[in-house]
Image 1: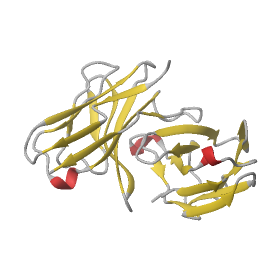
Image 2 (image 1 turned 135 degrees about the vertical axis):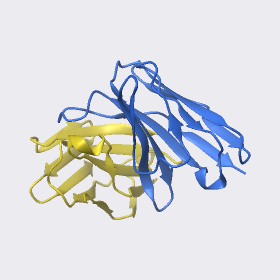
Image 3 (image 1 turned 90 degrees about the horizontal axis):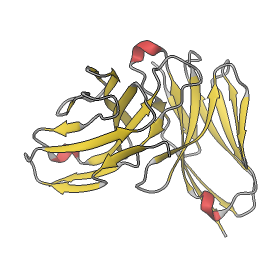
Image 4 (image 1 turned 45 degrees about the vertical axis):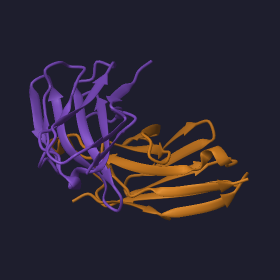
Length: 114
Length: 115
């Protein structure tokens, strides 16, 4: 059974710091991995999708890496800003016969202080 | 703008009063699904649909119904809501699962409280 873990559960950093969020998964049989952002009580905004054959994806100040063989992904945020404060969730897409659902981690709650 | 919309965004109701949460997408996606999010339990899939008139149970389907009469719409029906269905609900859509480039898009969420 696929399990997704995110460490740390919460992180507080000063503005301007570069930071790394971690995501690990137990089964390397995935189609892709998505990183999402969730503001309190709000929806999920897709940040980056990394296909299983890819090693990394970049969007602005965000860079996500994927090491499928070791079951790990990282989300790197450069020059963090208070507006980056949110919960970040990673999710993997398991094989087709599991109903297409995403398996989510519990999230990392990020607070960027001015 | 490509998006998934949900209505209502917030709902307070009482036990036993039937309600429907609507979900619509404008991306011509075949696949749609519903999740609920609860503290400490994360996101769990309720139901999913691979196409019109094709629906199936997810991990926590008890107490819910769905229908898929049109490709763009996937309503979630609570025929007799109970307090344990108080949760934050998300609708999601994508092209058919099974492709590495397939990205899932989520709606803004519906905060449901059942008294």
